[in-house]
Length: 153
Image (cartoon, rainbow, N blue to C red; front, side, top):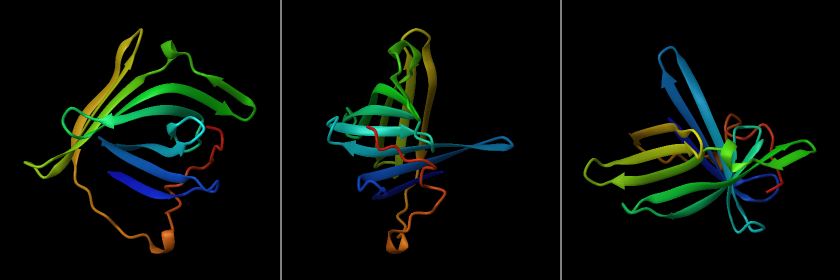
Protein backbone atom coordinates (compact mmCIF):
# COMPACT_ATOMS: atom_id res chain seq x y z
CA UNK A 1 0.00 0.00 0.00
CA UNK A 2 1.21 3.52 -0.76
CA UNK A 3 -0.12 6.57 1.06
CA UNK A 4 0.82 10.04 -0.21
CA UNK A 5 0.05 13.22 1.69
CA UNK A 6 0.75 16.79 0.60
CA UNK A 7 0.99 19.45 3.31
CA UNK A 8 3.10 22.32 4.63
CA UNK A 9 5.73 21.25 7.12
CA UNK A 10 6.62 23.21 10.26
CA UNK A 11 9.18 25.23 8.27
CA UNK A 12 6.47 26.35 5.82
CA UNK A 13 7.75 24.21 2.94
CA UNK A 14 5.42 22.43 0.51
CA UNK A 15 5.91 18.78 1.40
CA UNK A 16 4.83 15.36 0.15
CA UNK A 17 5.28 12.33 2.38
CA UNK A 18 5.16 8.86 0.82
CA UNK A 19 4.43 5.91 3.11
CA UNK A 20 4.99 2.58 1.41
CA UNK A 21 4.01 -0.69 3.08
CA UNK A 22 5.31 -3.98 1.73
CA UNK A 23 3.69 -7.26 2.77
CA UNK A 24 5.97 -10.26 3.04
CA UNK A 25 5.02 -13.68 4.42
CA UNK A 26 4.40 -13.12 8.12
CA UNK A 27 5.71 -9.52 8.23
CA UNK A 28 5.06 -6.03 6.95
CA UNK A 29 7.84 -3.51 6.26
CA UNK A 30 7.55 0.24 5.67
CA UNK A 31 9.64 2.63 3.66
CA UNK A 32 8.78 6.30 4.19
CA UNK A 33 10.19 9.33 2.43
CA UNK A 34 9.42 13.03 2.55
CA UNK A 35 10.04 15.35 -0.39
CA UNK A 36 10.43 19.12 -0.38
CA UNK A 37 11.43 21.57 -3.08
CA UNK A 38 14.70 23.26 -2.17
CA UNK A 39 15.08 26.72 -3.68
CA UNK A 40 18.62 26.70 -2.27
CA UNK A 41 19.52 23.57 -4.28
CA UNK A 42 17.10 24.27 -7.20
CA UNK A 43 15.69 20.77 -7.02
CA UNK A 44 13.52 18.36 -5.06
CA UNK A 45 15.19 16.86 -1.99
CA UNK A 46 13.99 13.49 -0.68
CA UNK A 47 14.51 12.76 3.02
CA UNK A 48 14.57 8.98 3.43
CA UNK A 49 13.12 7.35 6.53
CA UNK A 50 11.04 8.91 9.27
CA UNK A 51 14.00 10.57 11.04
CA UNK A 52 15.39 12.28 7.93
CA UNK A 53 19.00 11.20 8.45
CA UNK A 54 19.57 10.88 4.70
CA UNK A 55 18.81 13.67 2.19
CA UNK A 56 18.94 12.81 -1.51
CA UNK A 57 18.82 15.23 -4.45
CA UNK A 58 16.39 14.16 -7.17
CA UNK A 59 16.36 14.75 -10.92
CA UNK A 60 12.81 14.65 -12.25
CA UNK A 61 11.91 14.43 -15.94
CA UNK A 62 9.41 12.92 -18.33
CA UNK A 63 10.04 9.22 -18.93
CA UNK A 64 10.30 7.69 -22.40
CA UNK A 65 6.91 6.03 -21.80
CA UNK A 66 5.21 9.34 -20.90
CA UNK A 67 5.43 8.76 -17.15
CA UNK A 68 7.55 10.49 -14.56
CA UNK A 69 11.21 9.49 -14.20
CA UNK A 70 13.04 10.18 -10.96
CA UNK A 71 16.78 9.63 -10.57
CA UNK A 72 18.70 10.07 -7.35
CA UNK A 73 21.80 12.23 -7.09
CA UNK A 74 24.01 13.47 -4.27
CA UNK A 75 23.28 12.05 -0.83
CA UNK A 76 23.93 13.76 2.51
CA UNK A 77 23.81 12.34 6.05
CA UNK A 78 22.60 14.41 9.03
CA UNK A 79 22.63 13.52 12.72
CA UNK A 80 22.94 16.39 15.19
CA UNK A 81 26.19 18.22 14.45
CA UNK A 82 27.45 15.35 12.28
CA UNK A 83 26.84 15.99 8.60
CA UNK A 84 28.65 14.82 5.48
CA UNK A 85 28.21 13.95 1.81
CA UNK A 86 28.00 10.22 1.32
CA UNK A 87 30.68 9.08 -1.16
CA UNK A 88 29.14 7.86 -4.41
CA UNK A 89 30.75 4.42 -4.13
CA UNK A 90 28.84 3.85 -0.85
CA UNK A 91 25.45 4.86 -2.24
CA UNK A 92 22.78 3.28 -4.34
CA UNK A 93 21.63 5.31 -7.33
CA UNK A 94 17.88 4.96 -7.84
CA UNK A 95 16.11 5.10 -11.19
CA UNK A 96 12.33 5.15 -10.77
CA UNK A 97 9.63 5.37 -13.42
CA UNK A 98 5.91 5.69 -12.68
CA UNK A 99 3.20 5.85 -15.32
CA UNK A 100 -0.46 5.17 -15.93
CA UNK A 101 -1.29 2.14 -18.07
CA UNK A 102 -4.44 3.09 -20.01
CA UNK A 103 -4.95 -0.48 -21.23
CA UNK A 104 -4.96 -2.04 -17.75
CA UNK A 105 -6.31 1.10 -16.06
CA UNK A 106 -3.73 1.05 -13.31
CA UNK A 107 -0.50 2.75 -12.33
CA UNK A 108 2.80 1.00 -12.94
CA UNK A 109 6.15 1.47 -11.24
CA UNK A 110 9.65 0.28 -11.98
CA UNK A 111 12.48 0.82 -9.48
CA UNK A 112 16.16 -0.01 -9.96
CA UNK A 113 18.86 0.79 -7.42
CA UNK A 114 22.46 0.22 -8.46
CA UNK A 115 25.83 0.75 -6.82
CA UNK A 116 28.84 1.76 -8.98
CA UNK A 117 30.95 -1.05 -7.49
CA UNK A 118 28.53 -3.85 -6.54
CA UNK A 119 26.04 -3.38 -9.37
CA UNK A 120 22.31 -4.07 -8.82
CA UNK A 121 21.23 -3.62 -5.18
CA UNK A 122 17.45 -3.60 -5.31
CA UNK A 123 14.81 -3.85 -8.03
CA UNK A 124 11.08 -4.18 -8.24
CA UNK A 125 8.23 -3.69 -10.67
CA UNK A 126 4.59 -3.54 -9.81
CA UNK A 127 1.24 -1.92 -10.26
CA UNK A 128 -1.23 -0.14 -8.03
CA UNK A 129 -4.60 1.60 -7.98
CA UNK A 130 -5.03 5.12 -6.66
CA UNK A 131 -7.86 6.67 -4.73
CA UNK A 132 -8.17 10.21 -3.44
CA UNK A 133 -9.37 10.79 0.08
CA UNK A 134 -10.17 14.13 1.65
CA UNK A 135 -8.28 15.02 4.80
CA UNK A 136 -10.37 17.18 7.13
CA UNK A 137 -8.86 20.63 7.72
CA UNK A 138 -5.52 19.48 6.32
CA UNK A 139 -5.02 17.14 9.28
CA UNK A 140 -2.34 14.72 8.13
CA UNK A 141 -2.42 11.46 10.14
CA UNK A 142 0.37 11.26 12.73
CA UNK A 143 1.74 7.96 11.34
CA UNK A 144 2.56 9.85 8.11
CA UNK A 145 4.61 12.72 9.48
CA UNK A 146 8.31 12.18 10.08
CA UNK A 147 9.45 11.74 13.69
CA UNK A 148 12.09 14.41 13.05
CA UNK A 149 12.07 17.19 10.43
CA UNK A 150 15.34 18.49 9.00
CA UNK A 151 15.53 22.11 7.93
CA UNK A 152 18.91 21.51 6.29
CA UNK A 153 18.69 20.88 2.59
